[in-house]
Amino acid sequence: MIALNATHDPARRSWLASANTPGADFPIQNLPLGMFSLQSEADAAAPRPAVAIGDQVVDLRALDAAGLFSGDAARAVRAVAPSDLGLNAMMALGNQPASALRARLSELLREGGDSGLRERAGTLLHSQADVRMHLPCRIGDYTDFLTSYPHTERHGRFKGLADPVTPVFHSLPVAYHGRASSIRVSGTPVRRPNGQWKAADGSIQFGAVEAMDLELELAALVGAGTRLAEPVPLDQAGEHIFGYVLLNDWSAKSVQWWEQMLGPFLGKSFMSSISPWVVTAEALAPFAMRAPARRPEAPPLLPYLHSAQDRERGGLDIALEAWLSTAAMRETGSGPVRLAATHLSNLTWTFGQMLTHHCSNGCDLHPGDLMGSGTVSGERDDERACLTEIASAGKEPLHLPNGEERRWLQDGDEVTLRARAGGEGRVAIGFGPCAGRILPALPYPLPKA
Image 1 (spheres, rainbow, N blue to C red):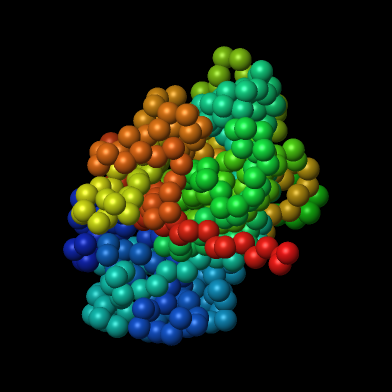
Image 2: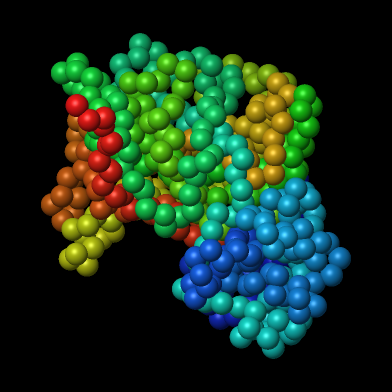
């Protein structure tokens, strides 16, 4: 487990005023990592590593060039070569170099700390409004889990299953392998896909999908990789988790439900969005909590998925929200409206269990691999974390404050996910937004008659 240290001190403040603002996503206790370029630079400009603090972005490569890093902190930054498109090489080093970098940054940015950065802030810091964020790392593989019982049970009922939650759900973290090539950073428009589905009258349709949905998720990024054929014990799983991002696993539900014999395919692979800042596992150490309680009908955990440490500290105290802004709302200056407010404790399985089960057959994981939590829905109505649940699979429309209705997402709708880790006696930290606006489907290039 990650030990608390001076970087977590709730009394620590930054000399940068915006980092001390109540409700700020990026106080000095956070220091998330990402990849950025300046808006003033060409679109093809190579991104470089950075950390977020308040409303500013700290250029890590520039800090290193200014002689402000040494030892493991310098090693972490220098691992990311100028030609790299992400933090993968830093992540591959494991969590210790990133921890050293965090400690040094905390010292440089704290009130009364090392003044080397403050004196040169004008050239080493940039306003977040002036930067372009990129994917934080190259994602080679993407696995999406199904770990919320309420989400699973509701979808099972919508599909008319005799047993809405199959017994395997209680025995292992169920997952499917997703499509990494179509993962994009927050702010990238989401093009409505074309697809095939079975209509209510039984006919088979193809065209711009109607049942477009969001899925509010958290995702872990793998740091130090694993070796082929070598499992990872549960108590060591955290050594391979570098940090976390928000994930919107956009879904074409009608396509997914029609095609799903082996698992999701084209109903999911058209695009997924992630937030640009990686909140490190170390930053989240103060928010560790008990793993979610097992349901009464669940069998005892098999030994490889059970440890006292994971039961005691495997959960994370993170609240998540999904917000909707429609084109009409933006035109009138109203909204957005909150669709869901849920908590990570609604998951049945911890991220440690997800990673351990993923590797239990010897599957190897690589730096930058992404593991999604699955939709984080809870029992309450306001915890339904996708529109399928909110609108009962299109049967009970959602009535918006401006008079609009939604059974599914429409063109022009913008969904923004947010999350905050918090709790008494701790400085809350956020993830920044994960947003995407839906564009109309492109005309499908059918062959000429």
